[in-house]
Image (tube, rainbow, N blue to C red; front, side, top):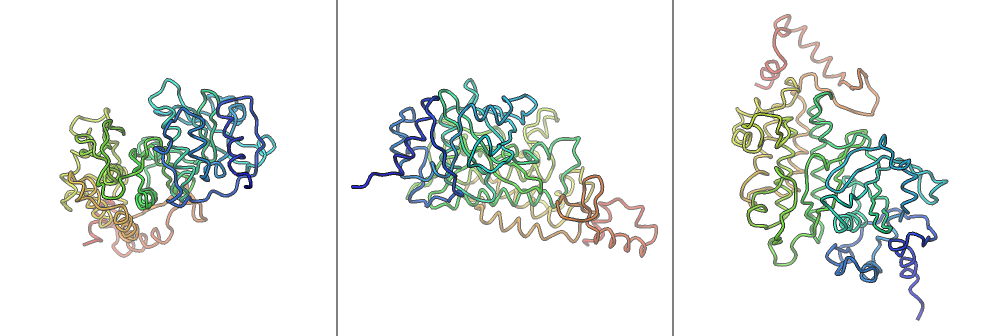
Length: 423
């Protein structure tokens, strides 16, 4: 019988996880392939996570080894300039994230590119299993709205992950930073739609995946506000067959984003992700951060504060982010509010699935005719002022209306003008 060359090749690579002095011959990585569900591994397939032979046995028939690049700790130290503090992008429960650059002369087989390197904090809230979950899921999944995992390092006690670099960082920094220009209405819809498509992809796998930690800080943005989901440390495969839910003894997630039934019963389904999406949708609509201790107690929990108003179309206008200064679609805002209300239902079966959410957001994205002076972030050509690309056609139409209506229109606020136009 011919020897299994793929198995032998993978074994030689994987042994570097347990011996920092054992180098391997690197091969040019092929484009990442989406693994058929019949072959896709789960974290639960690693029966003895601490055993190298168990890991080798489980991964021997997978594509993980060929999809990802295995880095040494020394290489990643070089890539990040010694984990220089000036390259620090941020941090979380897993550890700190550094900006780096891959030089093909130093690391053959990889395209020169900027990367984000996540370093596991050995004393942090997460550990080896969360690191393993990211490798297992992102090493097998490929989608335009999931962040790309380039490779990993598993050397001695070191656990690191290397991702594509997302220029604009996380959504929370763009949405809640008072020093930034407020995100335009259509940009918010674009981000929500991208994130929804990412979640929909996970839920519609034949073996559904529950993301379990959907929040603004886990949505990354490129320079054209293309949203991608990141941080799969808490992701898990959903129920299969006749099972309606997973029953978990330990509730994991982020306060304010976790579905109420998961907290009270430990029952986990894809509908828990839908609830979390509703919270983020509410943050995009209101511009308010959920569970923000800096605001008054009444508005701290934005779900409790805003949800009663979402079902009343006449009460939607006052809760829309005031920084938009009326520059949003009134019909679109009502549609988004109604969608958020459904997602935030206390009854999981009453929530829409993510495919339905995507369709609703696609429809909302088309409702832009009643926006006054709307501007969108774009990398395409157009009039440019202070980093913002303005819609020339809308500005010209607005000017024509002003000339027809005379000075009366100039005395109205943007919100008053918008209301008159949609009547």
